[in-house]
Image (cartoon, rainbow, N blue to C red; front, side):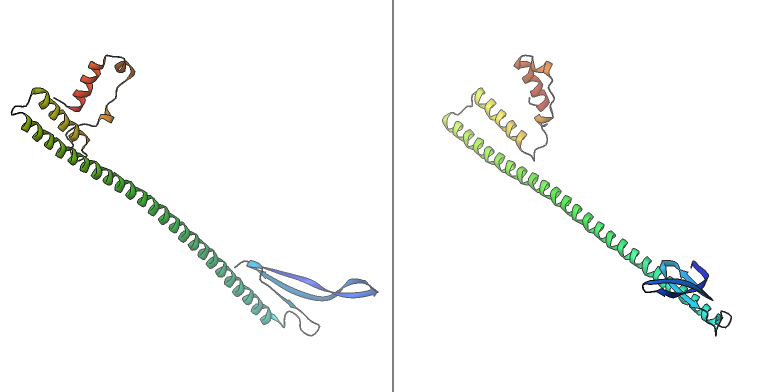
Amino acid sequence: IKISVYIYEKKKTVKIAKGNKKYKLTGLLALSVFGTFGVEGTISESKKHGFKNRLLNIVNYIEDIVSKSREKKRDFRLGCLKTRRQEQRKVRANTRKCLFSSLKHVEKREFDSLLNNATMHNNCNIMREYIKAMECQWRKESNNFIKEQKNKLKEAKILIDRYDPLVTKYKNLQDLYIDNAMMNKPWSEIQKVIDNWLEIT
């Protein structure tokens, strides 16, 4: 504990006139002790008791100053620790909130993706049922399929499989990169590139 001890000569106030006063030295000493965090104590000698006779009081005063300084220092550290813990709790709460928000956003995005895939898969199954019905209709109308009808059914099944998210044997058309030079070529060449990319035979 850092303390400062000052010994000075006491003064007394002497009235000169109305409203005027001056300070006069008394010839008696005073001992002032300052501790950390502004803790203070003062002992003055008197005509009857000097510092030598009051040595025990002086020691007690200094010990009291040290004790109060320690208490204030401890309270200050506890206050800092409490403030730091409150800030840490606040940071953790904000972190949990942000993390929860991020997880919620990710889960919603995944759920939306699953919902879209389920909807698309259901629509593809409806289209497959429609193709089966169309195939049965054509069989009733004619015993033998013509080549054009067979090609249409084949292309339709491939197209449905391409859009079905549960069928992964076909590549996604969005991943195909076609530059400006390719776009200036005839459509037949572009169609070949697309067909090769989608693995359509």
